[in-house]
Picture 1 (cartoon, rainbow, N blue to C red):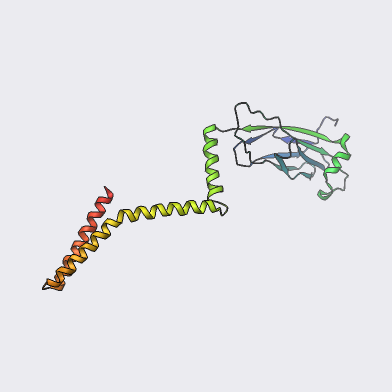
Picture 2: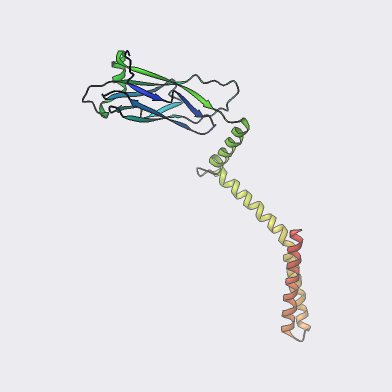
Length: 222
């Protein structure tokens, strides 16, 4: 489209997406109407399977601005040193009829008015973190979302298994003290028969139980 002043000023000129496996990324693009007329816009991408914008089409009032959010779907492939991005976004713009409103703006209108459409091309770049961070973040997300999230049966069985291991470990640690307490009670019951004082037996039995319990606690801590 010819002319000294472009219909729109588009910022930024390059879209930089943080590249993290399993995470969607987004970026804000600001469209400014440089004219005293309404300007319609349309957001296109070279690869619709990877990127999209919201809103896709719209209308900007004279001298006003509009924010478009462009997004990249969550990557499934780890980046490499040789990875280069050749993808682009294209912001198309045109001047619609004076009485047009936002409901009148469609994708077809830009194809029909192709000779009068102005275009801004925005290149896509990836912001790639370190490989170690990528691996750690991916597996943390996988464990959290796939194993412990979404009502996963696998996640429940993993939790149940861990609880069972803890239970059996506690049983193994406490079985000896349980037997010791039972033996103490049996011995004291026998002594009770030949004891002249029931109260004295109760006191002594209780003291013995306390002694065995404290000894078990110290052994367990060590």
